[in-house]
Image 1 (spheres, rainbow, N blue to C red):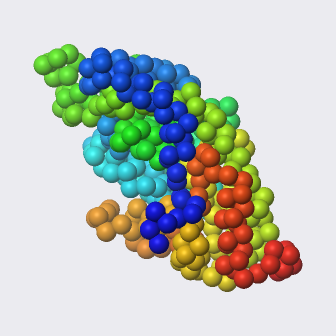
Image 2: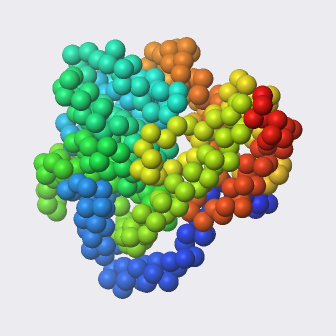
Length: 388
């Protein structure tokens, strides 16, 4: 079944865009009239606004979330000879960013209940060369800032947040992007705050990091035609920034909608726990912004994940897997020297996780339909499941 015949898509961006279509069109037309398509006023305005909304000082827009990681690490003076801790169960962009910065990635296993990085496991692989940790705020939930700050202080490490899935997420009184020396964000269209194409940003509280990042994204130039280091061309387009600036005021409401959707999923999926359907745990309450709503299908389930996913597709319900192969088992990175079995929690989760439809505007009846469809696929009545 293709996307056009899905009754409940995995993501529906049209709902979001239709509600503010006039404002978006006006923002784009303003850039067209101004003509400042590269490093224009709308970009500067958005950088300031997004940094302020995230509780930090400086924002530097770049072409993608991957560039935000790679260039951001360089701006933090992390590179050749430095080891960087990162979770093995993340999108490959986190890993590629570390490699592009010239640093050595050191993988860490995850917590099975939240899928977030296991800091106890991270402590066991620290060496004198370890310089930084990249906590990935996965699926919209932050790694505990309090625990991160204690960890970083204990081992004298920089915290560089990968917040690509956690726009305005909160935990322990911090917002994503305000915990470490710097943080990388993605504005890929399906993100909580998404552009009309690729885009990213580095946030930082350090003015020197911000200044270096400004140079690195623009050919290493401190001023036009004066290049003091080897940079690249990675600038968030003014048109994309205008779109994002227009969307930003709506983001708290959209995140709130996502959290309410997740709460309904949690309630309605509860009877399926004894049949092996278990949502990942939320340790952040309303601070979890649910870029994705992820369940585990464990050994108690009578069907495999593939069977459930295929049967849901037959019923017109689209799902995803984030992510089916941990980074250390990807063919491109066998040279890093890791083997199957090195990270048992992440490897097990990769075979169990399933992402259900999640987007602002997903209706209560649609959520119920998703859950009822899973129940019917399992061929067990909810009353029976409670007794299993």
